Length: 504
Image 1 (cartoon, one colour):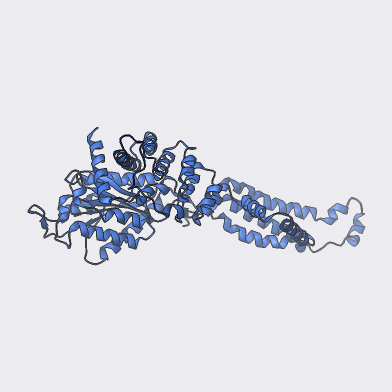
Image 2 (spheres, rainbow, N blue to C red):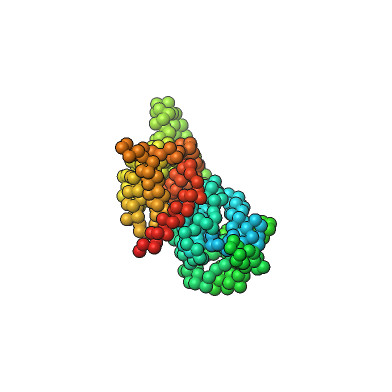
């Protein structure tokens, strides 16, 4: 802590020369003998001048000097503690990569390796309630299943449908899964950990793991004795390969247990990685200078003189009587906070409509309108910004309105501005799928209408309390409101992505 102590605005410390100058000027101004010596004869001056107690005379000056010194130190911004960036959760992010290669159907653990892995995901989400988690599925290819979100219900609705048959290509490409996970954490801009739920790791994955910024944890699913796989094959967990990977890549490795010991181990590793990363990486420093306001206020109490209390009370009373209540609240808030800061407070209280009226920044305003269920207004707000995040969120809002063709265009614009953005690519694939279903369901001689299978619940209207995270805040939120089979959506999505990768 002492080694980290510094000032955020050290140039303000130059103003510390003012307090001693103030005391010196007060001592000179209070010298009565010096003021009368030119008018009264020196032999009479001692008898005619009655000087007050020197200590009492300088006490107000000393008090004001101390107040000024404390204020200068506070403005200089003393700090020794880091803080996460604004509008970003301070909980550790976790990306779970689930192996869906055919060997995960082995039944050496009950009911099967993949089913046991899904149960462990349930337990991990319960143990990390409110923390941000993403899920990747991989076999011969790697695909984003759910982006980083704190919505456990959304994650479970998709992970419960995981099955090896969903993957378009067999095999095991752990390196691709690690690269996708690292990309997710890098785009999120926060510290995090990648968890591999697998029964084996190929040698080529080590190089991909060495370049990762976050922590890496591996949970081996299965037993060394192995189990039968459909088709008469027999699969064992390659513990030696897992240990070698852990040693070469600096990963923590363990095997699955029948109790929750492995879950507790994973949660502890995630928390440890988070503390280590936030202690050494570029989070903002927390300005602790405001604590000096407390002694400053107490010392200012000593500066009160006769009449000042009465005048202050009269001003406050006149303000209370003659200024309308609404104007009082707004004026007081405007004195201390910007419109965006007031919007953030309303957003964190869950009052998204009030937040939208305060926010001036288009992306934040659009996010608040989105949470309030005002999707058309959110589209208009996102349209004021030409960033990749704005186009991405605009696409999400358009899908809520059933405007799938415009949503496809919005995601394509987002990808033009941020090439290779996994979230936008995933949403674009699903938007194209929904557009194709809409066109297939339309009558030949009639204009396209919204398909009956697309429905939205009331969750978007009620909103959800949380911290503002701009594009991440609305990322794939529309998916959880679409009433469709998660397994069918995932299979089609994975197939489309595999075809896109094969094309280049």
